[in-house]
Length: 216
Image (tube, rainbow, N blue to C red; front, side, top):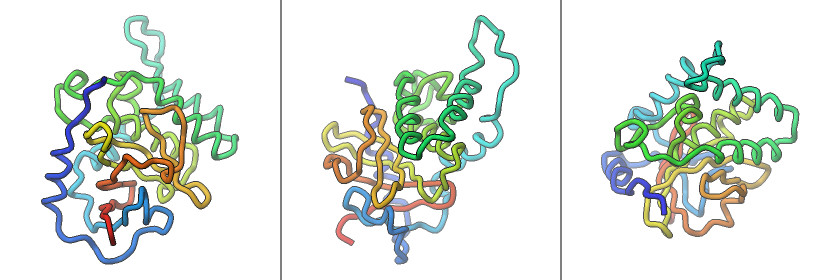
């Protein structure tokens, strides 16, 4: 079994936050996994995510020379070419293809990759090095953004896996009247209503983030 990150750092983050805002979240995500989403006012509580957004703009750009035989520099170029091949397909086919493409990468913990307990990798880093759960979700997020899906239809969700008793991350996508979950632990894209062992803690996209609270 793969060792993943403990839940404690995420719970500690929640203890530092002010009371949730009273306004309701988008109806599409308001009851994700049966929890109520409460929008938050500042992204400054999520420096890892802010760093990802900044580095994505600067570094996730098409590459030049791919002839180096020692280190394959074409991962990012191959990713962009893959996205072009599915750009004209129906949305559900795009979602499934993106999930499968990212899930082919190796699962590697942050200490082995970056010498840090918790590092959020952009697509370039993940496609070169593999990564852990949030790295899969981040690359899927930016894959669908490259395909033209609005950021309001996407959320990276940090949650508790109650089966494994660990923190985990997935990508949630609004699709019709449902929310689909793209998860590195399964090749199938499924509705959030079919998953009973995930308890969401918070979610984020490019514009905002939300706490997920029970019984509101």
